[in-house]
Amino acid sequence: MGDTGRGFPTCCRCGTRVIRLTSKTITNPGRLFHKCPYGDENNRHHLFKWTDESMVEDMKQKFDEIERASSTIEKGLQVCESEMESLAIETRTCCSVVSGYEKELRGFEKEIEDVKMELRSLKNMVVRVVVFGLLYKLFM
Image 1 (cartoon, helix red, strand yellow):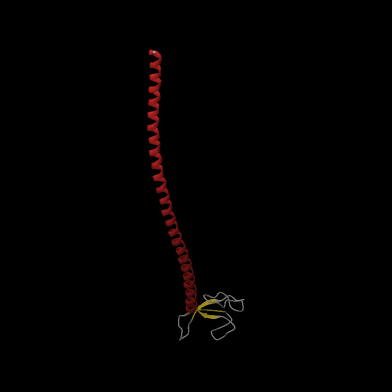
Image 2 (cartoon, one colour):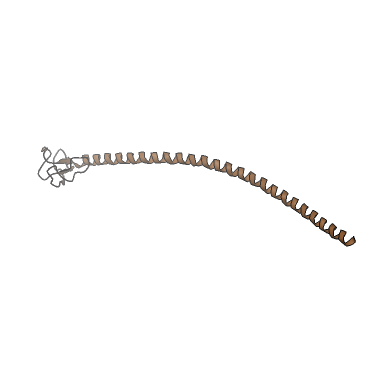
């Protein structure tokens, strides 16, 4: 029904909205408090709570939330770092594979050049055979 938790209260146990006042007592002059209009500091049936105590409770809650968020972020960071390590290993593996393919490609390029030279030689031979064949026919 009412606020009985930590932090700043908004309603009494009886359901009435609490008010914030300033103490005018000799023992707590100027100290802020929240209270039910129907209660006081000595009446346990209605809410009475010092504002500074509420503030401390509220700050503790916020620090706990920040600590939980920090822990979550830290775990996320660890996951990211682990993923980065995995990606770095994978990148090195890919670089090694690419390097192997580059070597293989250079070998193929050399083979292609060799085949081109062989084709030029064969072309020259064919041209010579044709020329000799034509010369043979002309002079025979």
